[in-house]
Length: 285
Ligand code: PAF
Image 1 (cartoon, protein in one colour):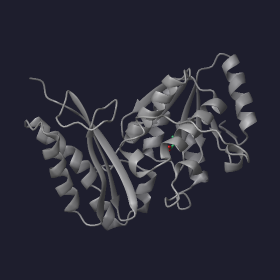
Image 2 (cartoon, protein in one colour):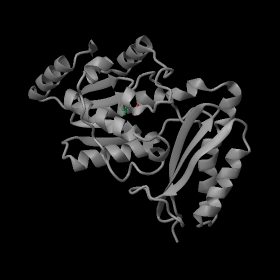
Image 3 (cartoon, rainbow, N blue to C red):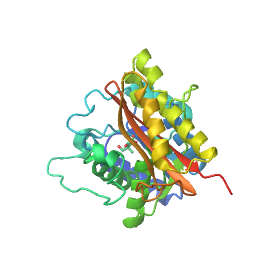
């Protein structure tokens, strides 16, 4: 039977008891409204552990004042059903009051890798993410935690935090799960009208275009970036937040394609902000 725990103290006691009994615990942190991408994270986590914990918490501190915290889609009943089907052992589902009691004032900030990509257009976002994830780690005490590569920068930032703060947790990244037409799965896809949904395909088409250009010999990032920007601008409802070709570890922009270059995109389609990315490998000589 899947357990649902709302209290921080109870979750800590449960996790400690499971650790003492010799179990390997994994955590998949989520904000709920679970889709196939989340379920894939859970399946991977399950393979690496014998107790699978997920958290469902729409974390207010990672949303900017003009962002979609209030509208963020929620479906606790559907989520519990899906979690049970995948074989989740424990769902940690705290209230905002449990996570941020009055007087709390401590934040975790990762300095450099947060200063690129989404960090530029979402000030404070990653501080909200690292703070809540550090708390979730302290509450659920996992040996392993699993995150999606769709949020490539988030995975980078969390891996850095774990290294820098000597957290004894293995971080695993899982490839992006896509809809049959290639759109990366995201809870925010539910905001899109049918016309916007069609325009949203320009994200994955941009990744494919870049891969093709590099495969055919292009090495100049500015040329590829221009081609991507033209593709995205040709689609209705779109507004580019960023198109970045950068180093896959430091996330600093690069001018020429190296052995591996990260292409990361953020595009607003109507009011919905979508992201996608791919690691582009320069073909061998
Ligand atoms: O990726 C997410 O859904 C969130 O950023 C996370 C990791 C659950 C933290 O709130």
